[in-house]
Length: 209
Image (cartoon, rainbow, N blue to C red; front, side, top):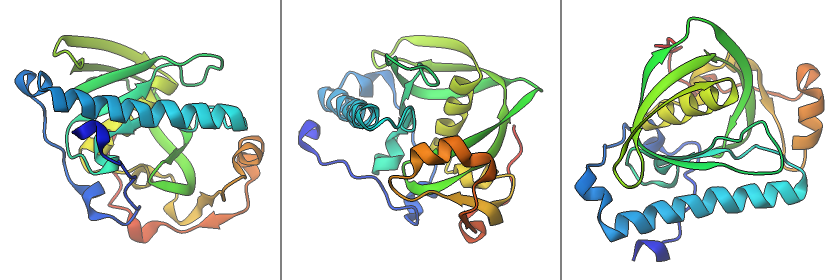
């Protein structure tokens, strides 16, 4: 059964991270093993969040796309409470599509579970509208702003084979953050001096569209 699968994060050099994911139909969502698979994805995010909360790591793990653990399907788990402390608001989105982006943008410091030691400044639309299915196959639509909008853009990128490093303002000066340095990085990321060049792993700069 899928529930018994051991889901492992793909290495940052795994070519599967550059593949587009397949959409799921409502009939596929009704399959019991597909629902077990979604539960397994939820468990990864929830357990990661609990571990980070205990270590004071805040909201570093706020989302997961299925392709990050080699499931090449358009499913992601996002924590809509990103940027807030004290509670979580996990949401399952199937076949999410961005239907509108604001012209105004924000710059944020992003990372990725598949790139555990790399951070960098990205430029994203400040607000978006999305359409998707929930895990029961119901159509949903949302307007998101700020951190949740950035998070969804990050996850939709994953499903299209794009990575946050493709959107770095300067991929030659990404931030190298070793394990245990996250709290320190949050306080000093504006003056962080540990730098790594990820140019060789990036694709050409992407438009916001």
